[in-house]
Image 1 (cartoon, one colour):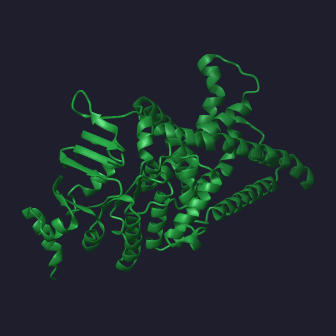
Image 2 (cartoon, chains in turn brown, purple; image 1 turned 90 degrees about the vertical axis):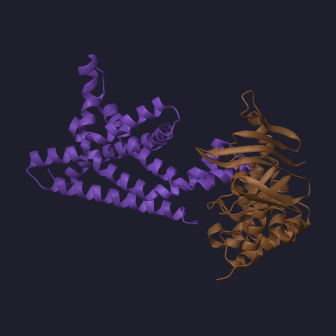
Image 3 (tube, one colour; image 1 turned 120 degrees about the horizontal axis):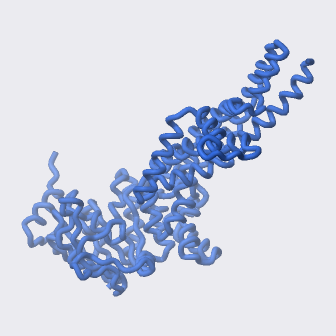
Length: 255
Length: 215
C-alpha cells in the first residue's frame, strides 16, 4: 500500500466533514474521488497531505505509521522527522495552481528539489527539463507564471510536483479553475501520467474523465464513502440509491 | 553673511540631517520586521506587549517621544549620560519608525494568499525557508509603495530633531534666519528637503521597477 487511511474523522467545530472514511491506494493505482460539493472530498485530500489534521483515525504511507490513535483515542501524529519523510512521498496539485509568482517556470520546478531534497543541481536541472518537456512546456522554462495561460500554469504545477519524485500524486479538482479547452489539455497530461502507472488520487467533477482513466472510483457524500469500485461498477451498475441519484443527475442534465 | 557662507554652514546641517535619515532607516527597517513577526506570535503576552508598543508609538507625537528619550533618563532615574543628545534622537526615530514599518510589513504578510504557504508546506519547505524564499520577496514587492510614503515622511520628520537643539538643517535655517534677518535660509532648507525627497522617490521607483519582472 502506498497510502492507507482508516476510520478518518474530521470536524470543523460542530460540522462533521469526514465521518468515518477508510480507503487505500495501491502502487500504480489511479483513484478518482467523486461526489457533490461539500461531501468532504477536498478535505480528505487535505488531511492526507497534512494541510489539515485529522481528529481520529490512522494514516500510513508506504506501510509506515504516520498517524495512529493515541491513548485517548484521538489521532496521534508522529514526530516531525517522520512527517517530513512522509511528505517526501507525495505531491499535491491544487485547484488554484499556487505557483510561486516570483520564480520562473524552471525555478518553480527546481527550487524544492534543490532546497528541500538538497539534490545535485545538474541532475535536478536535467530532470526538471525532462518533466517540463513531458508537460509540453520546455519552451516556457524561462517564462513567469503570469505570462502563462491557466492550463499552462496547472501543467507547471504538475511538473513541480513530479520533480520531487513522489510515490503518490494528489490532484485537488485540478481543472475546476479552467475553461473547457484548457481543461482538456490538463486532463490529457494527467491521462498520460495514468498510462505511465503513476500512483494517483484525483478529486474531480469531470465524470467522463474519471470513468475513462481511473482504475478505482470512490463516491463520497456527506462525509462518508458511499460506494467504491471499478469505474464500470460505480458508473454503470451502482449499488446504492445515493450513487444512482448522483450518477443519473449529471448524465441527464436538462436545461 | 554671504550666500556662500550660509550655504557652507547649512551644508553641515544637511549632512547631519542625512545622518539621522540613514541611521533611522538602517535601524528601523529590520527592527520593523522583527516587531511585525513578534506581533504575530502565538504567545499572547509577547503579541500584547508589541501591540501596546505600536499603539504608543503611533498614538503620541514623535516630538514628544524625542523629549522623553532625551530627558527621561535624567528625570526618571537621575542618570546623566554624556553626549546623549544624538543617541536619544536616533533611538526616538528608530523606535517610532519601526512601529510604522512593522504595520506595513504586517499588511503585506497578511495580504499573501494562503495557497502560497500551503504549496510550500506540501513541497516540504521549513517554516523559515517558506518565509525567506516564498513569502518575504513577494511581501517586499507589495509594500514598496507604502514604504516609499513612509520614507518620504521621514525625510521631513528629521526636522523634529530641532526640538532637542540638534544642529540639523532645519535648526540652522531658523537660527541663521533670525541672526541675519534673512529669508534665504528657509529657501535653502526647502530646496534641500525637496531635492532629497525627489531622490528618494526616484530611488524607490527604480526598486519598484526591479521587482516588476513578475506580477
